[in-house]
Each structure stands twice: as C-alpha cells, then as structure tokens.
Length: 427
Ligand SMILES: [Zn+2]
Image (cartoon, rainbow, N blue to C red):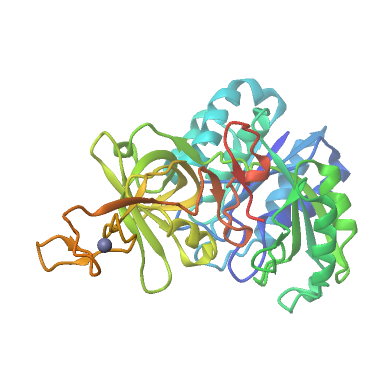
C-alpha cells in the first residue's frame, strides 16, 4: 500500500519529512517497508506553501491496511501544526488492487504538481472519481502533494537523488543547534562531488543545517544512499533523535519546462529559455541585479539575480547587449529568477579610441567638436575614431548560483554530464 502525506509543517516547527521518518519506524509493526521513502518537492513558486513545499511517500507491504490507515491519520492529526493558518494537511492511500487503475493518471498528476499550479478542487475531484482512501484536514491543500507522492511511487524511473535527514531529539527543538562546523567542511572534502550543498565554499557557510525551529538537524544530499550515510557518519554534532534516507526529486530540475519562445512563459512556473541580452545589467537598491533578454518572437523578459545569490551577481553584471544566454529559472512577479545560466555566445565588446599619429605614435587629441583629431606634436589630422575589440572577462559555459541560494529542485552542475558545454560549478 502507498501512503502520501503533505503539508503538516509550519514555520514554527514540525516538518513533513520528520513525520515520515517517525512513521517509517512505527509502521513496521504492521508489515515491511518496501524501498526508501520518497521526498517530493512540488512547484517552488507556489506562494501559499509552507517552508519547502515537501511531501513524503511510504510504500508498505501489509496484511492489515486498515490499521495502517488508522495509525497514519491519527499521527497526522496529533503531530501536524494544525493551529498554523498555512498548514492544511492531506493524506492519501493507494491500496495494492488500485495500483493499475490510477498509475498513469497519478503519474501525470505528479509531474504536473512539480511544474504547474494545481487547485485543491482538482485534487478532491480526482480522489472522488477514483475512490482512493484519503483524509484532508482544514482546507485539504495537502491532498495535492499526497496524491503527487503516491504518483511518484507508482511511476519510478524519474531522475532522483538522495538525502540523509538527521533529526534532533525532541527536547532540543527550538534551541540553537550544536554542530561542529569544521566537521562539515572535512566530511564534504572527502565526498564532494558525490555529495553536494553541504557547505558553500565561496561564502564559507555550512548550508545543510537549517536555522528554523523545526526538528531537522541537517540534511546531506548526494548521488546514492551509501555516500550520504557515509558523509553523515563523519559529522560531529549533538546526538540525533532519529534519521532517515529519502529518495527525492531534489537536484533534478524536474520543475523546469523547456520553451522555444519567451512568449510562452507564464507566472508561477519555471523554465529553460534562450534569448539575447537586450538590456544591460543594472543593480537596484537591495542588491538585486536585473537585465532583460528578448527573442525572435519579439517578446522580452526581465531576468533577476537576487541579492541572496551573492557572487553569482558579479558574473551577471558582466553581460552586455548581444550576448546569447539560456536561462534556467522560475517566473514570479514578472521576473525570471535565475537558478542557472548558460552563456551560449558573447557579443564583441567594442571600445573607441582617438586615433594614433602615424608618424609620432602618440594618441591624437580632439580638435574640437565635430573637427576630428589632431596630433599635438606634428599637426597631422584624422577624422576616424579607432574601434578596438575589448577582451571579455567571462567565457561561454554554464554557471549556477552558489549553494547558499540553491532551490531544492535545482540540479547542481556537478550532476551535469554534457561534455559539449563548459561547466563552472560554484566552487
Ligand atoms: Zn604626430
């Protein structure tokens, strides 16, 4: 039987992945858990999401599904942050004999929940039509992610990574986390690039330890379950309450929709789109760097590297009109929020100089407005400015924002394997 759970967390505490880890232990009394649980990240542009827009899925082989259903619903109702306005939990169960009838439609639902905006009504009507057992709390928004998590388990084969999530002992929740930061740098140096986003080298930060009051102590992301566990074993921290390895769509770019024209871009979705830089980059108060791109369709769009992307902005500021770029990012509030950028080609950057005197080899001076140029020494005149092509101090290739600004779903460049494009990982 498949169990999907979503939207139990709040900004003040609790975390759907923690509930998943706890249920992984508790549900063993009813049968055996099949494979790793899944951690699915949904469309990152949804404004009413609780923290990370994460839902979880568990696959259990059980002879007493009713007891499992009862246990899960009771756990969600006692542990979810139900008094938080933004928290609207949902749980969905898919029993063995229902797999075939919902496999395809739930697979599509999963893909759409990562890329599009799905209404609560659509989720409820799906449940009504299929007769799946479910429980929505309050407005039931969590039913969307609960269905998506089930759809992901019914349709394996999507690109995935793994995360080892370590949770704090209950009495420590809400207090400062006790971790030896140096141990994170040391552990990372032995497993990067098979693990990523543990630390941010350039900004000298440990990025895998959250600051919110939730139960997570840290999360180690990587390419397989063994390497994330091995990294975690090397860390010096306060004692763990529990831990869990999830199979996840984090770090896969599953949210991005490739489009061949800027005119196809819509609010609250994420894209891969190419264009020509049509407005020079500028930085606004607050530190956000903005430029625009356009394409053959005549459409243009504003692209933004926000202040939290730190050193990535200095790269963006080097773009000039005429550069051809491919942007990976989310379109929100009329701006394409850059996650990665491929510089496909650079436009020549031309500077003009006063001409040089052919006999004296000295730079000529202006002879007055509209009068051309004249050598101060010998009086030779010229009317032509010299155009010099400047060296650009960036090169074509693909660049990403630093780990401290990375979206959960964004695929880090260490996972890119295209040999035709030069890759610049953020370290
Ligand atoms: Zn001269």
